[in-house]
Length: 172
Image 1: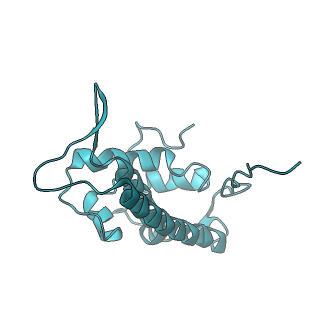
Image 2: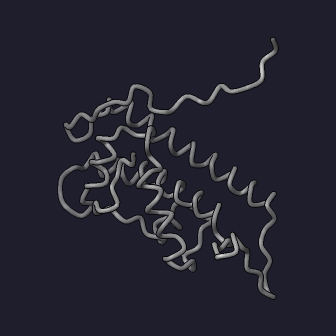
C-alpha cells in the first residue's frame, strides 16, 4: 500500500532542484520524462524506509510558511537528497527506452548512441550507492532526533529497513 496517495498535494521536487542535488542530471530533460519518476519516488519509494507518520508530515509540509523549522531543515538537508536520488535511479533505468505497441524500443539517431547495458548498470549501481549514503544519513538524523521534530514525536518503525533476503543455496 502506498504511503502517499496520488491525490495528495505533494511538495514538488523540481528538475532544477534534482539537478542541484544530483550533479549528473541535466535540466534539459523534458518535464514529462522526469516528473513521473519524481512522483513515483515519493508515492512508493519510502515505504518501509521512513516512518509513515513522518513521511505524511513531510508531504504536507509547507516550505514557505512559518514554523516547523526542524522539520523544514530535515526536509532540505536530508529528505530532499534521498528523494532526488530515488527519482534519478528510476529515471536512469528507463530513460532512452520507449514503450510501444511492439515492446520496449530504443530510438537511435545519427548524432548520438545509447550507453551499453554494462555502462548503464555501472551508472545505476553508483547512483544506488549514493542513495544509500543519503538514506543512512537521513535515518541517522531521525534516530538522533529521537523521531521528534518541532516538539512532535513521530511513530518509529519496528525496523526502519526491511532485512535483506537470506535466500541462498546451502549444503545438505
